[in-house]
Length: 119
Image 1 (spheres, rainbow, N blue to C red):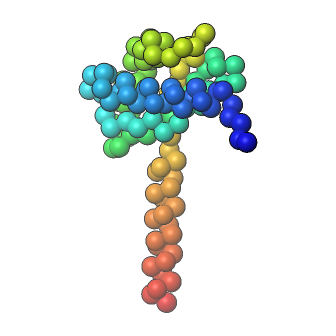
Image 2: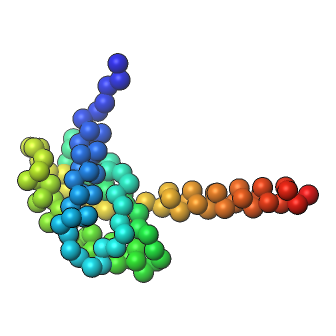
Image 3: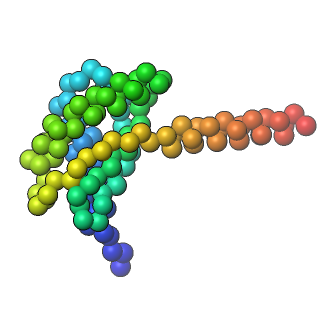
């Protein structure tokens, strides 16, 4: 039987709720096409690091980060209404560059494959 840590379950729930808040409720124009990729919650459920990705360039990333930081209080308050936790974790946002890294690796592999076909 697979046992899950409570912090992982709470992280998944926070990810779903924040995604819903960003999609439906938050009206900040700085927050563009933001996707919440992962939420890492500490074992004591006091801190949550929210990893996000943004579709767009460097300017969109900066603007989205500023919008997320300014909306942190609202997001935390909404999470408090939706989730039953003794303490609502402190939320920090961190850009997730794993998608860009994956695209870069795929591009390199296509380049290697293209050079193999030419030989």
